[in-house]
Length: 70
Image (tube, rainbow, N blue to C red):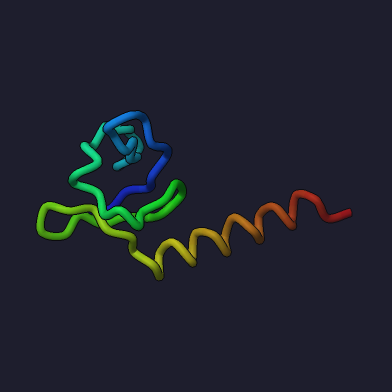
């Protein structure tokens, strides 16, 4: 299962999974995970999918550049 970290709120990480936001206890999320990361559930713990996160960041950067082109 994969998701995207939307934000952190108190003891929870809010992760968008299949278009719906879910509150996940922080103790189930790797401490290195940050907002905007694509995460994957492995052995009961959410960890960063580094390749998917990099791909998403590049896609967002390209889209932003297209919007601001003259």
